[in-house]
Length: 333
Image (cartoon, rainbow, N blue to C red; front, side, top):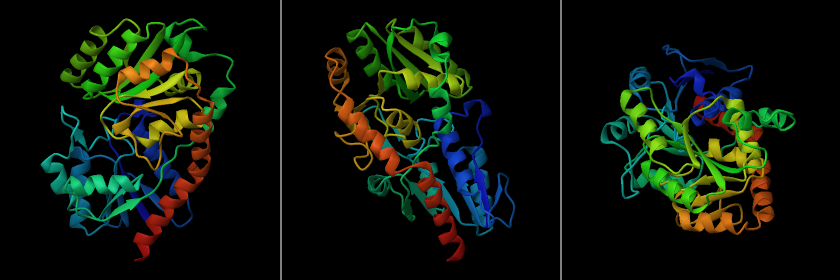
């Protein structure tokens, strides 16, 4: 098999969701009967896409014209600006812009991390086959960092050893998420809340990021993506991992705190219940629920243990095996 993975993005974003997914797909292709390429050629057997930007869209059309099976991976990395396909209206409603939807329905299939995602995509107008593969991330680098004697996260942000903090990742377009986090930070002033933003390099995105950081509570630190070891050390030492946004959860980001037994506080509309339910995370309606949990220091051992258990049942080895099996099934049909 000759497999194409087309995912144009900045190499600096190596820890973020789209890059995590790309890495796992590449691992699945480390077989004797697989040749992996990142540029189009007419002899490709399966073409994989993680986004629908102009570069990817061009290659998708080339692949379709050459009768090459094309797969789009969705809901694994929707927070990532370079992998974002689904958008969210101000009232929280999900939608796929018409130009993207038309291109999607020209493709051969979509890969998603939960059965519920299939239902959502059908409601959004997707008509092509949808394959479910339960995701996971490679945790070897996390295990290495857990033994580190230097906390590069605290050093990077110049915070004391006893300062408690929580972590969030989000897309720069998700302003509603920032509003919720700003209210949460004001309600829990003894915690720091670090928000890592995936944004583009455009002038508009730079202005958005600057405005987000300027107009928030002093203990809400809004920043662009940081080096991957800094980010992961931050997750290792975090008291909570929080998502109060409107987008459906992104497995590639969420699996790391689950594996590390960092308590999850999630807004109820972001979850896929097959992956995370109330036994694995605190599910809240808004920032008030999150503030109450943090202030009262709610017991977390049971839910973190359940979340960790899930990462053992759906691990990176099973993920890559499922990816390979899907490719082989498409190749031999």
